[in-house]
Amino acid sequence: MLGEEIIPQTLLGDLSANHLNGRWHYSAETLTAEKGAYALLLQLSDELIAELPRQGSQLLQPGWYIYAGSARGPGGLPARLRRHFLQDKRKHWHIDQLTARATVLAAQAVPEGDECDVAAWLSASFAFDIAAPGFGSTDCPICPSHLLVWRPPGQRPV
Image (cartoon, rainbow, N blue to C red):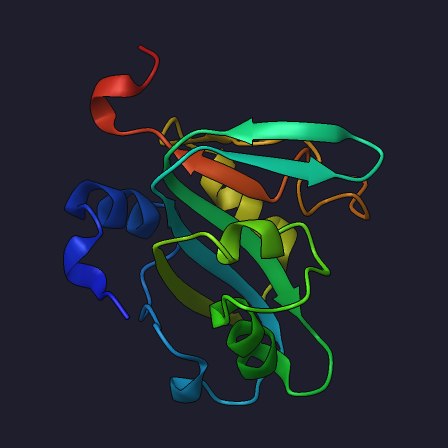
């Protein structure tokens, strides 16, 4: 598993500025069995066409993505993140299409947190854009997407 050393420092700074300044996990084994939300950081090296039921397909370009999710079921955060860290799995959620192809996976747990709050924190800056409308948020009446893409400083709107 690749570590934090390959994540751009400017990306880590943008995440910290948006309330994500805790410990990044590269394995679910280091988490306690709490329920809550999480931010899943992924890097795509190649283009990916994500299929979204009732919404068609979305082209995702190579880059750094962050997904806001929740883990409220049995096993809490470790169970959900353990599944995300597996690359060979049955595709059940939208995010499974990315986790199967991502070259870097890291997660930050937000115990007792809310996935919509995580998405909102990240969306509030110019550092992150909606990657695919409706991605991971088809059951959410508030959020336009729970998948965001990072824009390096030189690519941000002025």
